[in-house]
Length: 361
Image 1 (tube, helix red, strand yellow):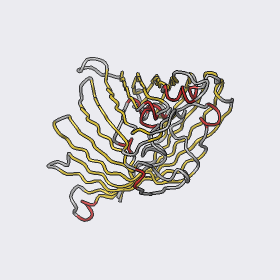
Image 2 (cartoon, helix red, strand yellow):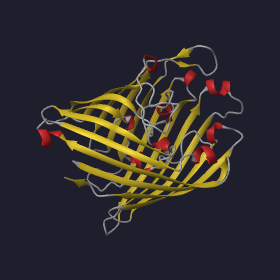
Image 3 (cartoon, rainbow, N blue to C red):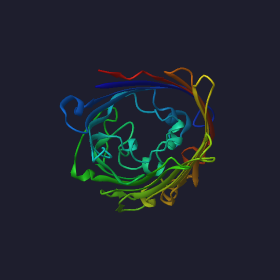
Image 4 (cartoon, one colour):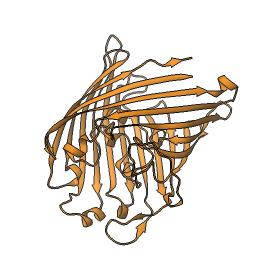
């Protein structure tokens, strides 16, 4: 059995624009454990896993900025919850295929980008076109749902991922609890992603499609429609293959059904520079921008709504020790919440990451 723990602490201040000036401290404690059943009971390829999170200080964006994203990707209601609880079975000659069942985080496998993981704004973790969906969001932090996912290596460097999740994650009426409810009217969230992973210039190519089996209400008229969409992303390294290539890029484009979504298009671009100091501590600098288009349905149903919203983030992440990482951060939010009445916001912050060594027995 292996145990892991990490503590993330954010100090953010809205210096200008948005809803109002103000500061807040946010915190996230994550604890996870895995149990290798092959080693324990000789069940080949089977691993049990569980992870839980305790969050404090949520609501910074809602109180001070008014943006549609979340300035901090640990911004969540104060509560302790399970994020994932389930089993994974690796099968095939070398365990190249994988089946996961249980309470699952969709973003652990789908719409994942290593370069974009540097950034703190949640819009860079999973595209707004997908993260905005569902009655209580898709099965992602902080509220996950029962699901099953299948990862098949269909060819060298090619993986095909498919999953089905409960269409309503958790209980919308009790957002602070870990709740598993299965109702026929919830429907399912279905998602499929084809990936190409290499060690070349283009490290990862991904194309995903998703859709809900239960229809959602139109924003502007009577009736309903099934929300569905797609995304494509590419992560690359710049420079010759025989050189050290510290520059990394990421580009993502995604779309959702217009008549039931606040935002129907999103574009994300990121540029990172990864370096190591002479003592071997890793550092990463990055600048990223996310643009989301306001759907015509939202513009028709609400007043003083702008055509788009944009987040620009400049960040620097530095490992101080083997267990401590610091990350100063600056964000500029254009048209927060797509509301014309709100001025562009300037947000500054500092993140501390403390990672405990893995404990095994």
